[in-house]
Length: 405
Ligand code: SF4
Image (cartoon, rainbow, N blue to C red):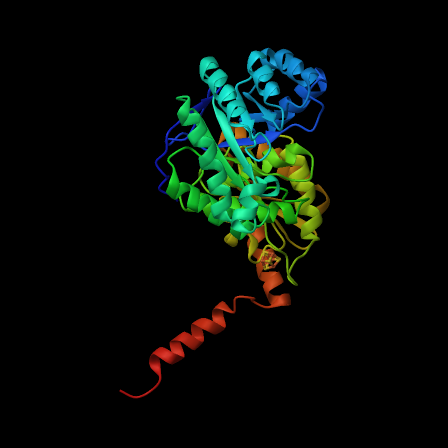
């Protein structure tokens, strides 16, 4: 499913376009001290590997700005310098060759300072994100509106835009982050109605997973589904690699980014399960994730419903009585002892990624389908048919043929 994207201007963060129909990019931020060049670069590489297209680093000291000068030539992705309070550090980051800046209008408030930064960014040809944050909103706006309501956040951003306009600077993207999901959503909706600059989405201070993940998905996905948003960041209290992964996965799940890695699906388990589905799914996920194969793999708790319910998956595993049934596109290709089933799944996943579906279906074990059918029938006779197919068909026939004309 595709959503009609909001029409926006475009900015370039290094070589990554943002806005005007460009692929939605994923951002994250390092947690290292930026003057620790090697430590910061190691984290940047980790974030890029997990799916981040753009990485932000803090620029809070002269040493941090000097660190950026060393990081820039070695970074695999564009770098954004995060600036609070000291506009001179924004000028220093530009001098260091950074790809973009993030300014917080709540804590760099002097008009002449803001304009000086915009002028320098314009001369350097780099964009600025106006990063409004409900938690650090200008005190005058808080007093005017009585709190960090959407109108206050948008006014903060648009005041900054006007300062930029005054010096002819239009290389801008904007965020209006809030930690309250409904207010975050309303702030971005209002902003999207007010300006055509590209938007950076995020729920600020979302907290640790799983709550932080849920809040971020609720806010970001709601807006993406309305066509609003050009670049995203999950602000999690967690290893930033989790942020980058979550951002990438959200875009993949929404069909906004082509899947490049594993998609493991699993049934929620129920009384029919023949194995501990949670443990098997976790083990399979851990083993397969490190291979990073671009396939969808299903782990299902029973052979009665598993292969059918997961027939869209490239590869699947369903648990029988002491055995694992491996299936490709719903067709059972191998039946293996339970203790070997995760290993067999991993082996088949590698072969599937190398050889493709047709070749692996052609290489199936000839007796697998018969064994699978016998086991399925046996389990149905023991557990009963959860779908009550036969009973339902009889009832349907009854209804269709009974009664009077
Ligand atoms: S696949 Fe089997 S074990 Fe899993 S939820 Fe469905 S019926 Fe239950």
